[in-house]
Length: 108
Image (cartoon, rainbow, N blue to C red; front, side):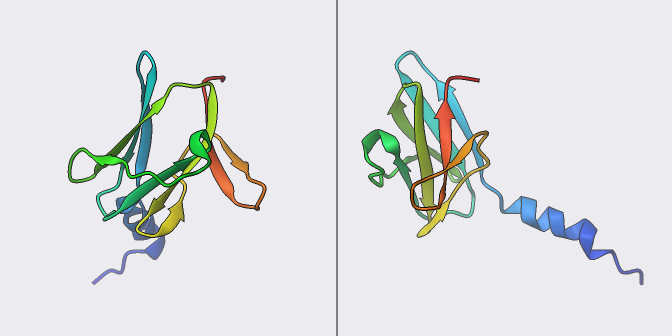
């Protein structure tokens, strides 16, 4: 029996639990989506309202959605099952407390 190298299988296990994150822009709103089939509870915090934790709507078994006003730029993060999480976002920046936040911007 041949043993498979651990370095081939490890990325597959890590990718299986990863959350995906995307946006959909509408006329005056921004729909922010998080897909995470393992999450039981999701909260969203942004600089738009002083990082107040808000509960996104669960649209199916693995998808969570929150509707925000469409603005030029804001910072945000998720709390997934009680732990602060950043999705794979294109822009990140350090906050005043030494933590990272995702940055949404309409500017390239």
